[in-house]
Amino acid sequence: MIAFLTGQLRFKSPEYSIIDVQGVGYQVVLPLSSFYELPPLKEEIQLHIYTHVREDALSLFGFLTLLEKKLFLLLLEVTGIGAKLALNILSGISAPELYQALATADSQRVQRVPGVGKKTSERIILELKDRVKKIELAAPPPPEKGSWDRTWEDALSALLNLGYGRPLAERALESIRRESDPGVTLEELLRRSLRSLSQ
Image (tube, rainbow, N blue to C red; front, side, top):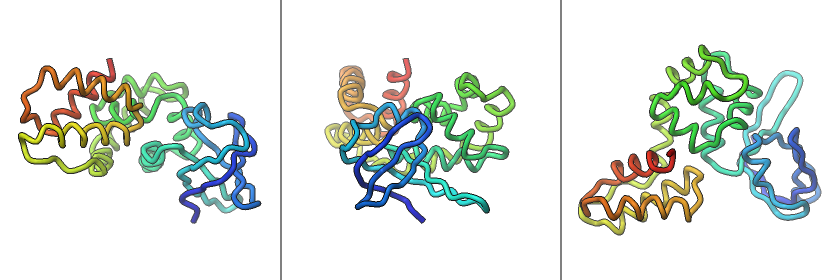
């Protein structure tokens, strides 16, 4: 099973892209969130891949960030959601925003994605609000209280892993630094950062 591709971007469109890996062209379908961030043609690209196997086809779905892929796989676990709808959801909402909507059980935000009705959004929240916590385990473990610099660095790393840009994440953390006790926990710092970034 293909899990990762590194190669030259030879073709790109909203429908699919082609990655040249040592002379072999892989046709990969991406969510619009990843498509918009693709580099110019002939530049090297790295994609996280989900290999979707059916009786009549083998399809590759690509993601620029690991968070996108993890959320895609979670969506596939929801009753009634296939690869096409999961891709559509990630095309209609950024990975960090979807992550936060799932973590905070915000079904109304998910419902605003084109093609997702009220019942589907509620089912997504119901089935994934606890499972999404597994993704949080990828964040660095919380350090001991009082080690603010390490906590800040770990929070920044976690926000970058969630897909936020470094300048945006750093501004959010600096704002919270001015208002926080030096002994703030990583969990609290992340919670307040995500709340700030969603405004």
